[in-house]
Structures are given as structure tokens and as C-alpha cells.
Length: 176
Image (tube, rainbow, N blue to C red; front, side, top):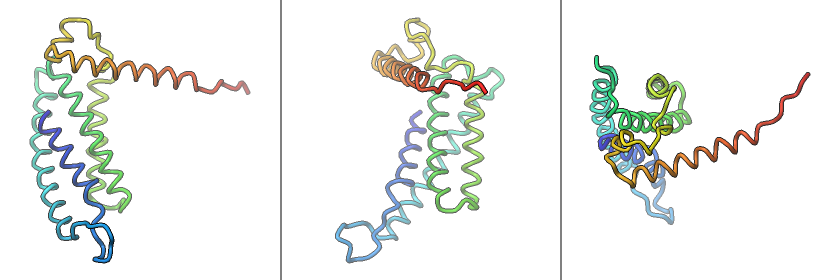
């Protein structure tokens, strides 16, 4: 999980912190030069690649081992897959707006599709969001940490609210 969080931070630097290099010396705001932006982007990209290799090999061992993912690994796998899905979606949005024929775009699209498929295969029938937090075995999955279960409880409440709001907004069917 720590590696995945580091990867997300590096990816945010790569995507969001770098697109505004200083274009001229006359600009009132002070930005770093294009050279500095390029250097930061290269360093962030190297870190991303190294972390991706480590994370993907660990996920492969956990998910596709002969024993299966195991009950204790489901929450970290769920979290990592969500972070990877969101990371690759952001990459597609950033790279896709520049050039769809880029090989980086094709790779990001493939990775995004792969993670969505794996997530769907593992968690489609049930998600950690639908677990009963009052059971000891579920509470144990989160290290018996009341802060985490409190946050998940709020998230579940908000999700229920969104789902009920969406259901009330559906248009009635027209019989033709």
C-alpha cells in the first residue's frame, strides 16, 4: 500500500504539477524553466516505472497465486486496484488530450482495461464497501482501527445517499 501511495504521489507530480512551465521571462509569475520541468518529469517517470514493476509483481503474486488472494489481502488489493485504475484514467486524460496515436496512450489504455477487468473479476459480486462492519472478522481486516471503519462508514452512507438520489432521478418509462 505504501508503494501504491508513493506511485500516486509521483503520478500527480508527473501529471498535474508540471504542465505550466515558464514560457517567457516577461511573465509576472515565477515558474521554473522548461529544463527544470523536464528534469522533474524524467525523475518522476523513473520512480513511477520502478514502483509499477514492484507493485504489479506483488499484485500478481497475491491475486494469481495457487491459493488465491486470501481473505486478509482483499482490502489492500481492492485499494491498490482502485488507485491503479484512477491513476491510469488520469494518464489517459492527460496523454489522450495530447495525442491518441501515442504508444504511451495505447499502453495506458491497455493497463486501464486490464485493471478494470481484474477488479471486476475479483469484486463484482461483492465489494469491501458492502461488508458488515459489526462482525469481528471484518473489523479485524482493518486492524481493529476505529478511524478506518469510521471513514468507511461515512463513505458507505454517502454511497447509499448517491444511489438513492440517482434512483429517484430516473425518468419514467414511456409505453409506445
